[in-house]
Amino acid sequence: MPGGRRKWGASASNWRLHWVEKEGGVFKVEQEGDGLTDAAMEEWGAWMDSQIERRFGSDENTPELTASTLNFSRNELGDDGVRSVVEYLRQRKIAVQMVKFFKNNIGDVGAWAIGQLLAVAREPVHEVHLSHNRITEQGACSIFEAIARCKRYPYHMDRSGRRDTNGLTPVWLRMEYNCIQWAAIEQRLESQQVRWCAAESRDGWGPKDSSPMVCMHSSYKNQKVEEPADPTAAPPAQAPNRSSAGAAASSGGGGAGTGDTGGGGGAVSSASPLMAAHEDPSLDEAGLEQVPMYVFLDASAGRRFAA
Image: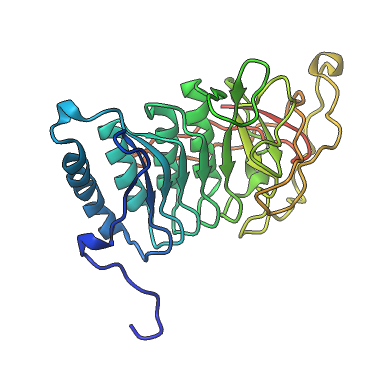
């Protein structure tokens, strides 16, 4: 359409794959801003198979495959497109280090699929970029639930990058500018604990001697929806034993910036008990499974929430 956004054509020549190593199985996929739709992604797996076969021949000669970067940002992908990609990666047992789906039309089902990728990929995922989509608090909870259950994070970092004293580092997660009403899930609490923080940069997490499981960008509270205060809501319950719960964390570097660089980091603190809120249903593949609830604390401190 003249003047409109370019739509994806069906030609296989539009797909791009770059092998990082001369003979190895590490590759990059850069399809940012290509006008991809969910229908186009149905073809991607078959095209990938053809490229893998062309490079290695039979399955017996194919090494373990790793996508150092998988970038489908700035497209027109929804939940079905994300699920097509994740299902292909799972079937092929392809590890992914960095996955980018920012600026698409991804909702809670797509977020659920990303959570499954985090949990079952051959190796832990290092970075997940999901900003500027339409994920709600249900989708956010499903991602954290997957991280909590799989017990793979923080993960061992073999490459350059910040690590704690045990060689561990958190997964970097960006979810700003979605439709997540964080206030609606601040009061939710379950039994399985996860430690997380917010920081301005990938390596800005804290404390330095003990990595959290997740580090979110400090702008995570910047969303497309307003979070109106509920005048009828009761104040949070106080901790029954403040000495055992631990003192509140002091203000750290979890500001409201939106950049990808910076050195600020959040310090981990103990979470005070909060009032339980009503449970909202989550979406699994059949749209039936319920998501456990979590507690999110202030962005200036590290977080401990229950999965």
